[in-house]
Image 1 (cartoon, rainbow, N blue to C red):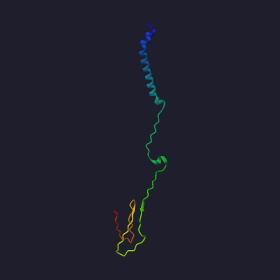
Image 2: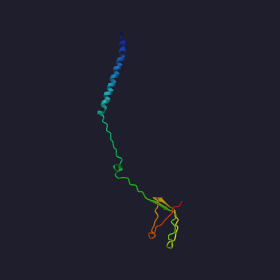
Image 3: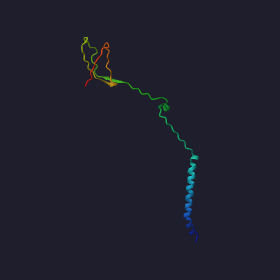
Image 4: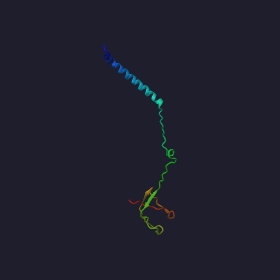
Length: 112
């Protein structure tokens, strides 16, 4: 048996042995990896704007109302008489009806 024939008969065993050694080396190296390079994970579960910027967010909400026709400034009506005032007002929240005529109860109708 010549030397070249012996080499070819052992080649599959040698390549399998080299593959096993390479796999073992990679596995051992991968197992040692966390010991050489520690991994730090920072976890923050805070959603507060105070923690990040120092002050809470402040939102100003203002009421608004718009009156298109407020009617005449003064009307004289005899006691027990009737007066009709027509105006258009809308807003958020809806504007209240002001009742100041000597605490008399004012009634109003909404336009259709």
